[in-house]
Amino acid sequence: MNATIQQDFFNHLRRTLLGGKISQAQVDGINAIVASWNKLGNTDDKQQLAYVLATAFHETAGRLTPVRETLAASDDQAIARLDHAFQAGRLPQVSKPYWRKDADGKSWFGRGFVQLTFKRNYQVMSDALGIDLITDPAQAMELAISADILVVGMRDGLFSGRKLGHYFQGERADWQNARRIVNGLDRADVVAGHAKVILAALQA
Image (cartoon, rainbow, N blue to C red; front, side, top):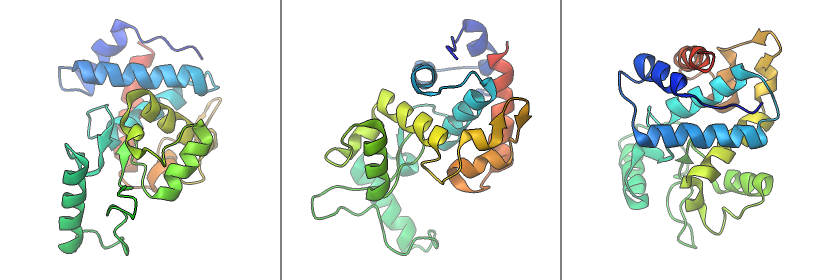
């Protein structure tokens, strides 16, 4: 699908999902994701595109621009915030602090439109996209690269083994379980609601 985002889409989204206003950063983020979708999506399913955009909206706390884990302004701040949360017992699922700098001085905390974490996952995406995220993991914060990570990761099931085609195919749309593509069923109903609003905007 060669999706083209028209002003009606942004107007609809501003009135519904974005509380009456939209920033240039959000516009740029949406355009980057749609450009990546047109290049890599390999489908004419607007439901899939809507779910990709909804995932980015949720994972970036509405910013629709690549973010560091904890929404930190710098790498050092992200590491400090994660350390603080870990030491306070707020990350019970974490056994080894993956965000701390390794022997090469690199940190593998979450970055992007969807939180890419752990060195092995940066390697998976490096292989999938033909770029070197291991030498420079900060590339995952670049707009176009982050959009490609989001699209290819959801298209091919590189985040969890589950992919867009498992939940959206023809007339079939499983908005709730599609959350498994990224993060189990965490906030599945919220992301599903966002996706339906975005789909209506795409159809506007």
